[in-house]
Every structure is written in structure tokens, then in C-alpha cells.
Length: 435
Image (cartoon, rainbow, N blue to C red; front, top):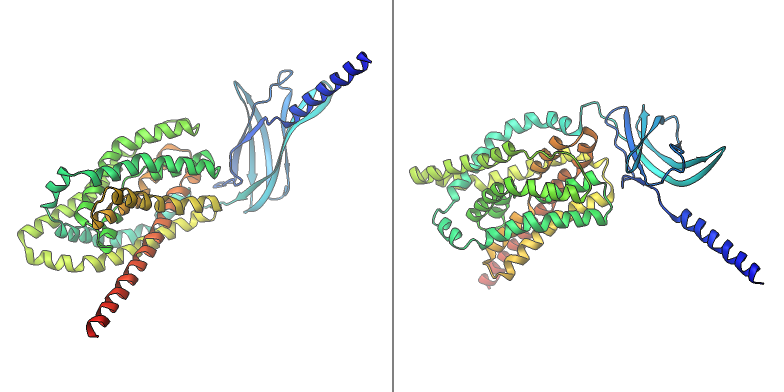
């Protein structure tokens, strides 16, 4: 009786051990269902934590759903602390298909299936240009050159609207600038990292969102501050201050979050681009301040054309962003689009809430919200393009373009709602006055 019970228990432990082995996961593939092909070949890396019983006894087998669209050239294995399998794929046409990846172990003459990953979706998108980004630059370079004088004139007109007496007050009470800096460089990057992990984005794409979230305020901030009746002088000062702080905070955040995401390599901060952005804001605005002091009549004319110029540039900016961004939207999944919508919305919400809690005036609350929500996404794009290989750069570049498009649409919606409410309120006031 005791012998039978011992045999039953032994069989039970063996079966439980085998079941536990079957539940173990050894393979780790990038957290994406989409592979981007910018050329006719691509390499997919699969990590394996399985320990070989004999040297090189484990191997990877790849099954293709559509061998006509996608072919496997070879599978190479490199072993150190972790085993990496590199799958080289080639394609001749665009389309979608699925892969099945199997990990096998050869035990003598027998072969045993260790693990299987089914339905790895592959979306093939080929480009004739070197990259999405380069193609976009080539398309819109002529348009940008045409509107450059208008942009400079508009910034000069903003300089005419600056009230110099506001500057000493701001430096004595820097709370709005501190709120924007904390939101931009501490809270937003953490939110970008957290949301990208919740949505299980690939590491490169998650880094793209984090870098977009850690960017300083964009030039559109003081434009919307004018249209939404915020504090224009404060908005310009905030943009310049956060751009200077970005020289320190962007390298710090890129180092911290790249380590947290498991990305290795040297991340290049575009110092020249940050400084040129700062000068691009400061020089024409300084000219506007000089015009206001030397020739007030010209300053009055420039102030009158600020609003129409701002509306024109806003719509051109949204058009150009969509023109470039639609190339990336072909590869965007719902999670990326959701995160693109959330990033500017959270910045606006955090900025306005913090300013309201601190009991700041309404125009200042609007300005803090706008500066926290509208980010200079193209600085993040520069970091990504300088730091990653082409395939990873194109995957990560989806983030800044998606955020730029979504923030433009959200701010346009807010502006339309605000103007509609103002129109209704003025109409009611006129009717009450006539009665």
C-alpha cells in the first residue's frame, strides 16, 4: 500500500514538473505586432532564456503564412548570458502576413518543441526614399521656405505686444514658470513612460513618446496664448526658459528612461538645434521690441496683423504636420493614436489644474496650461534621428508626429469652442442691452 502511494505521488510530482515546464516562457520578441520594412530586407531579433542541455542543442524554426510575400533568408544564433536569434527576412511586395516562431531542442535523435509563438503579425511598408522623415522634408521644403518670412514677421509682431514691465514681476514671482518646468520635465516624461508601458509599446516607440513628453514648449504656445486671451509676454518668457532648461533636462531624461526601457547606445542631444530654436524665437521678438520703442506707429500696424497672421500660420502648421504625419499613420496602431491624444491633453490638464490650485489669475492659468500641453515635438524627432538606426528611428519617430498632429487638432477644437462661447455670450449681452 505504501509502495503504491509512493509511486502515485512520484508520478504526480513528475507530471506537475512537466506542466510547470510547459507553462514557462522562454522566448521574448519585441512588443509589437508590426515590422516596418524601409528596404527589401529586415532583421527580427528574438531573445531566448532557455538553457541548452547540450551545446547549441536549441534552435529556432520560422513558419510563414504567405511564403510568396515574405521569405526567411537565415536564422542565426548568438549565445552569451542570453541567447539571441536573428531572423533575416526579405520581401518584394507590400502587404500583411503572419509568422509562427518555434523553439526546438534536439535531444540525441529526438526533437522536442519547447515553445511556440503564433500569429506574429507583419505589416510590410516599403519606401523609395531613404526614410519617412527624409521624404517628408523633401516634400515640404519649398512650402517652408515660402512661409519663413511670414513666420519671422509674425514673431516680430509678437515682440511689439510684449510689455517689458511684466518681466520684473515674473522674476519676482516665478511660480508660473516653475509649474511649467515641473510639468514638462518631470511629470510629463513619467506619464509618457507609464502609459507606453500600459499600452505595451515597443521599446523604441516608448522612448519616442518619453522624449516627446520631455520637450520644452513649442513656438505655437504664445500663438495660442494670444488667440485664447492668455498672457502673451509670460508665454514667450516660458518658452525661452524651458528651451534653455531643455539643454540639461533632455539629456538627463534620455539617460534615465533609456535605462528603464532597456535601450543601450549613445543618445545625442541636438544642442545646436535647441540653441537655434531659442535664437529663432529671441531675435525676431527682440526686433519687435526695438520697433515698439523706436517707431510706435509701425508697432501699432504690426500688432493689428498679429491675429490674422497667427490664424494663417496655425492652419499651415496643422496642414504640414498632417502632410508629414500621414506617412507615419499608415503604421500606427490604436494604442499609439490613443497615447498621441493623451499626451497634449494631460499637459493641458496638469498645467491648468496646478495653476488653478495656486490661485493664479485666469490668463496665467491659460498660459501655464498651453505651455505645458504644446510641446516642441521636432526636438524629440532630432534626438531620435541622431541616436537610432534607421529602422528603430522610423519606429520611434511615429511618436513626435502623432503628438504634434493630435495637439494641433485639440488646440484647434479648444479655440473653436472658446470662440463659439465668446460669440454666444456677446450675442446675449447685445440682446439684453437692447431689451
